[in-house]
Length: 416
Length: 169
Image (cartoon, rainbow over the protein chains, first blue to last red):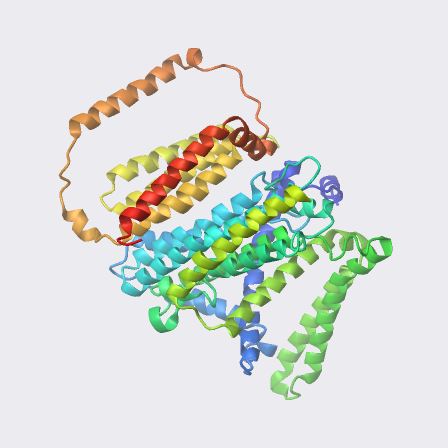
């Protein structure tokens, strides 16, 4: 390996801090590709999990257990006719999905997947994330207006009203977590995403458990507001099928529609990672102080490899249960190959240098995955809110609660 | 980190800001004007970043591009664009506009010519890493009274808006 590769891999700073444009580019590409793959996986998981919630099988035809369904979906979307309504404002119609996509992907610049695994660390990290993700409202409004049709316009109005109202409760909840970072001898807090996680490390507690139940309530407010912010069930009024067809993207088809989907799921992952960074200790492994010591470090560092080996085992069980008909020969071989790849990744993750390097990324992604599963769970469980109820929850419940938590956190911070 | 291609980015962002500004006043379609204004505001945020003021840039994006412009678009969207495009503007203030433009342009040229004498030569060393903390120190320390007065002013405006909009409180 060339020297600059090994030199960088041994350092413990982000590419932004190291001032290396080359590594920053590599990280951007990895994150972009990773998020796109995660969106596809999430798409499959959502259809599959929703189906099982409703006692159906979900996608089963394309590949074993529908594993190749996202790829089939992608091909379908790419080859579909791209329709632009004749009365639409062409330029704005073209711009809207791009704005949503850029807004949700740009936020990943500051997401800390690990101490050294963020593209860069900004002094205004969390502010940057909230600000850039709030730009996606513009895309929604533009899409609704440019379609020049009734349903999209109503959907966009609802959506922007909802996103603007829940942003306030969300911001106040975030402020109470940022306030907790200042509870150190120097009395200076931080907005930087890496700094927030390091503050939790220094205070030896995740902020969700800090001043119990204050941190927990703040996380709760954020977790509700973030579902509303990303327009997902039970707050998916902008896309309420029975009333508004598909809301602001009714007139979109094919590739442009898939850009909306990509942006929505990327935004879901982004807000989940805000929640994980602020309250759930970011990349820190569980119990870093309670179960401290080298042997516990070793035990926790085996988790990523074990997870992949477990997935490989599930894949091989699936191979054994495939129908024995010759028609399923290719599918069975494919599933076995998939299992072998997973097993190989699992084995690679046991190698000590890789293990140490990958650990923090693994714990971060594991925590984000919990939130992503919650999104699916909400969607399967809760009925949709009515619009006045939605506004009532946002302004009359979440906002006062978040404000109260903020004040109490400040009082608790002074007292203790 | 050493700055990369600073002059290029400055001229790019400045050019975009000017382009956006020109488009705001030349487009007939109000929504297009609002979008051009967003372009201007975002390039200004980029310029703040280049001045090592990330907090100001972030606030610019959240408040102006993300907050105020959404409300602008919200209102403009509900106006019938076809009708407003056909209507002729009735308040033609060519003379006042021309005078204001000449005054502002003269000011700019004056600053450009005499800039060296007017502004301090030395570059301020700015710590990018402590921008937010520095602003907080000034706002809540040195300028606390002014800051609170400004927030009171905003509160009065909010209450006034509610009183005027609601028939019965």
